[in-house]
Length: 340
Length: 253
Image (tube, rainbow over all chains, first blue to last red):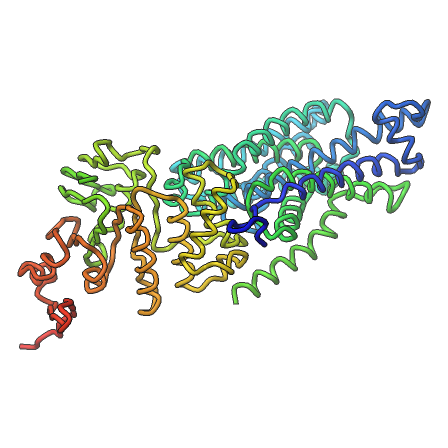
């Protein structure tokens, strides 16, 4: 492994990051090319980069107004979920931790259900806001319930589970009371990117960008949180403060992703494990790479959702779970083998 | 004297864990805290690290230690959090973060870690997962990380408690590597014989108080030592002059 004589190899190879960036670019262009109307790959490329010889007329509208915002939203949501998942796994010392762990998903689900079941139909348009507030409130409640403001990650985890169950109970009750809302609630829970437009991209990209910039800037220090608090402190970080920053930023990213696209499962678990497993590195130096891999994963999954049963659409959550659930079992199996 | 402890008291809610301790700890020496469970040894290490609050004063080179991130202190816990999926190379490289900044991968750092892995006989295992290491190897990986940190002071909590005799000696020899580099060592240890073999200074603690402290040979041969252990130990001297302390069998009257 030594590249230089008398020194160990570098921990992270940034060529992997560059490789992921290329894959993301390629799948983005591919995803814009494919759909009910097939458009030439090179024409799409020229249109996207505003080069001469690009598409015009209807094709141009399809590319720039329908497919591109949807692909970009998919990439934003994928990067948000994958990065938050990786951060949660680090903070909670739990390889199976998921961005929805602290009640973000159930809280957002409750918020969305309130919007969908309200007798005042004007609230439909406010669904993203309700979902966002629901998710953030649930996580905040978990913090308060766990007490001592996050002195111990395990107590936060447990209170997250309790708050999540509570929110789900109310959500189920509301759903039963308003059976007309069952279908929209259900389809929202499976997640979809059909509502993508430039305006959704605009507001969600702001919050996701803020969250990701914070997480990338503390990425290297996050490795210290894999140790005990005393060890982390001795290496020069304030573990309690860093945990709060990391969880707050990851929650912002998750809540934004959920309000823009519903509950898309498994991205937050599959992608970090894929990157870490293939590179044999758990370091959070890989966080940018994980974000790009998550973006590419969701763009491809959405491409499948749009085209497999074309012109009908599959919920994207079905695709991610179809790939994610077997993968999850493989991870569990390997863990069991390791612990034996 | 590097560390001067004055009237140190630590309470957890109402329980007094460390009770009015005043002590001086010598620089570049190995000081060993010995005492039964619940004596407050681990708490003492944590306040020396600067992470836990306390009443009284602990001055390291004339500066109060609490929340002082300028000191370079390595900490080796009794039960470390073992990061899942992390390789030995990544683990030991973490030690460089204090001196060179987080995520630093300079050639100097990597060369330093290379040397440390050789010194601790972990070279060749750097791509193994820390979660797959045996108890003795894990303890060496911890000490390798501490060596990579190039600390001024290292605190070790029961570094040998879970190891067999062979690994105990190998780990203690690795700790001596630190002393050769001029590092001040403070460790806790159950085994007073081992403590007397390696440490230069011994501090006997019980119920949050310091009962005895001084050079290893003074403490071992002090008549108060038996009293500190409720007269339940016997001290023998081997032909080589090395002291051996064993628990005495309860006499039934």
